[in-house]
Image (tube, rainbow, N blue to C red):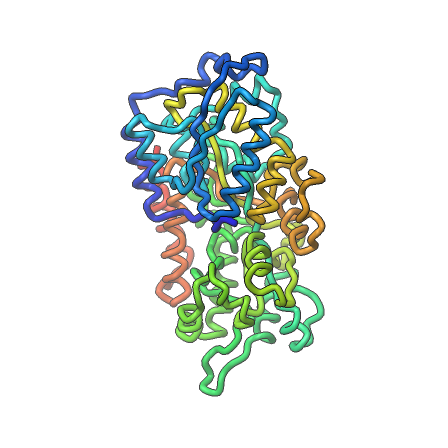
Length: 449
């Protein structure tokens, strides 16, 4: 199973360098319609090079199984898959003119730069020619895989985020159901928290400290219905009251623990992608995390008595309950692909064939990225009630994501340091601080254009 996507601190630099390198170039596909080899009637033998970022043996085997299914459908197309290719390698290949025919990424934050620079080709002509039903893909997922009218990537598996809770600790605290509102989440946190004799934290009911595992701004803000960008693409954190509401709730709970005390506990937590994860060992009673955590627990702590639920939502926005944050992998055809028509066939198969999506999802523990993929009889995880929570979050009409931007999602990267200062009491005026953050974000967004 792959780790969750991150808006890396170097994303803006990568996108800026890529944009500079490609400003004089245009995409080789999209302006005059699909390459003729995209036609189902064209059976000319061809070999495609396909880069992906998976490294785990089981994940690599799942990719191989999906490619085998593709080859059965298109026996004249051979796919050479290359593992462990991250975004820096993809961007380097784009600058050097050595890009593969198809490339997949864990980081949707680079989509805006790839679309605006022509680094990845616009897939719209192919989608139109093949009458691909984009309604099969939830709107939030469509938003992070396209930019400025160009769909240069397709989603290939998704991450949905919800609440994990320890049923044994719930029973001991007399809590009979997962919290549904942010007030209930704070109350449950206080009931579940246990202190040592020296008053340090032994068990944290929930981790409100930003940067503690998946407690990140992009995973909290959806509970308050926040919209990151305005319709004109400008930063929206000061104008949208959801951001101040989310940060106020968060800091109130941090203050209840004591920021210094909570930070010490956060810093003592083992790496989240190890068997010693604090939720695995009962040191965290509740946490926000992605669907892949179920697979980690199954492999590393199968006797853990836990359940999953949607994240609680703002008390005055009950209509949001059941929704959450969604992100995930993207896949597309880089500029310079030598076999664009055949490459499109591979992209289309991996991202729209229900059984191909199920093959990957069963191994990675991720969410299939089409509604038909969720209905595939080969999706064995559909019978797991803990996973069904995340499938339902993925489908919820109020589920949201961080939209693609030309700055490589630097507006998200900028927000976390601000939130860290805020929770430590270093931002005296939240409204003024958010306004300053908007100016910083807008400068990054302008630079990325």
